[in-house]
Amino acid sequence: MTSNVLHFHTDAEIHKAAETARQTFRSGITKPLKYRRHQLEQLWRLIDDNTDLIIEALKKDLHKHKNETVLGELVPAKEEINDALEHLEEWAKDEKVVPALINRVGVTCLKRKEPKGATLIISPWNYPFFLTIGPLVGAIAAGCTAVIKPSEVAPHSANVMTDLFARYLDNSAYIVINGAAQETTKLLEYKWDHIFYTGNGTVAKIIMRAAAQHLTSLTLELGGKSPAVIDEHANMTVAAKRIAFGKSFNAGQTCVAPDYVLITAKAQDKFIKELKKAFEELYSKNPQNSTDYGRIINNRHFHRLSKVLHENKSGEIVIGGQTDEKDLYIAPTVIANVDRDDKLMEDELFGPLLPMIQVADVDDAIEYINSKDEPLALYIFSSNKKFANKVMDSTRSGAILVNDTLMHVAEGNLPFGGTGPSGMGSYHGKKSFDAFSHERSTMVKDLNPVSEAAMSVRYAPYNDTNLKVARLVLESVPRFKKSFVLKHFKWIVFALIFGIGFKRFA
Image 1: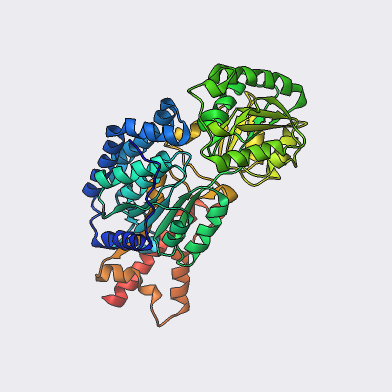
Image 2 (image 1 turned 90 degrees about the vertical axis):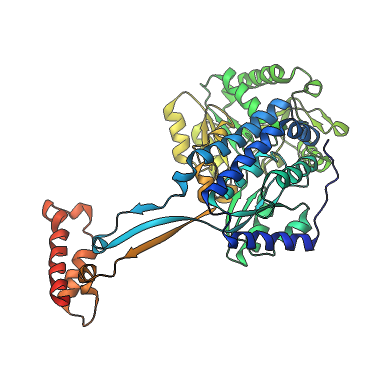
C-alpha cells in the first residue's frame, strides 16, 4: 500500500545527497559500461516487478486508469530503457573525425563521449514515473550520478519511487530527495553539472537563475498553448476523435495536450457535433461515472481551472462544463466562439478545457499562432499537403504532429523538446544520452620528425613564403569558386610543405 504522507528531507540530508552524488561520480564507478548496463537493467526490473504498485499509486494521485498508466507511463519508460540498453556501446564509443589537411600526418582526431557529472533531475506530477525515469535513463546511460526530486503534488507516486529507487539502484549514485519549494530551493544552491527540469515556465526561470550562479547547463521541458489547426475540408469524424483523445487523456493534464482549436465558421458546427459524439464514445454521456476518465490532481488546480472557465467572457460552452469539487471532477468541456484576448487564451490550460477560435482562413490561423509564444506542440488536421506544409513552414513550435495528437511523444527516435518559452534542449532515445554527455574534442599527435616537418610553416622566423603556403593549406576555397584544379591543389601544396619541412629538419 502507498501512503499520501511524504517525508520531506532536511537540509542536512540534502547536503549529504549532493555531496554523495559528486563524490560517487569522482570515484569513477559510474563510468564503466558494465555498471551503466546493470543500473539500466535494474531500472527495467523496477518497473516490471512493481507494475501493480505503480498503477495503484497513480490511481490514488490522479485517478488514472490502468490503461493510461501502462500505455502512457510504463511502456514508454521501458522502451527508453530498452533503447539505451540496445545502443549503449554505440552511443558511448569515441567518434573519429577526419582532420583538416594540415593535421593529416601523425594526427588522430576524435570526439570522446564523457558524462557531465553529478546531475539534478526535477520531475513533475502529471506523468510522475515516465517523466522521472526518462531523464534518469539518459543520466545512467551517459555515466552520470543523479539526485532525483519528484513532485510532492503526487505523493503516492513520490513515495513509491523513493522506496523502489533505493531498493533497485545504487544508493550512492541515484538518490531521491522529497520536498516542496523550500527543499528544491536548497537543492539549487549546490553546484550541479547538469540540471534537467520538467514543469512550468515560472519555475524554470527560478532554476535558470540558480544555474547561472554556477554556469550549469540545463535541459528545460516546459509547455505552452499547443494549438490544433483544422482544415475545413478535413475528415471531421477522425479529427474530432483524435483531438478528444488528446484533450481528455489524463484529464487534459499533459504538456502537449491540444490547448485550443483554430477553425473556420463554415466547419465549426460539424466539428462540434463530431466532438460531442467522440467524447460520448470515450466516456459515455456522463464522464464522471466512467472509470476511464481521470481527475484533477488537487484542489488548487481544480480552482484554477474553474476560475478560468467561469471568468470566460466571450465563449459559449457547447460540450460539458460540469464540475464537482469534492470529486475533483471537471468534465471534458468545449467552449466555442472564444475571443482571441479571452482569459482562456492567456496561459496554458493544463486541464480538460478546449476553447475554439474562429479564423477566416489558414493565413489568419498562422497569424494568430505567431502572435503567441512558441508552443511545445502544434497539431494540424488536413489531408491537403499544401495546407499542412504552409502551416509548418510559417510557424515555430517544439514539434509538429499532422492528423493526430500526443503520439509523437511515444516515438523514441524523435527528439522531444521545446523552443523558446516551451523549453530548451531535447531528450528521448540518443538525445537523452546526449543531454547528459559532453563531447570532449580530442587531438592526439605523434612526436616524430615526419609530422613535425608538416608543421614547419607555423614556426618563426616568419616569412612571406611560409605565410602563403600556410594559407593555401589552411584556407579553403569556397565551393562556388572551385575548379577541378583547385579541388586537388591542396594536396600539391601539402607535398610542397612537407618537402620544405623535411629539408629544415633533416
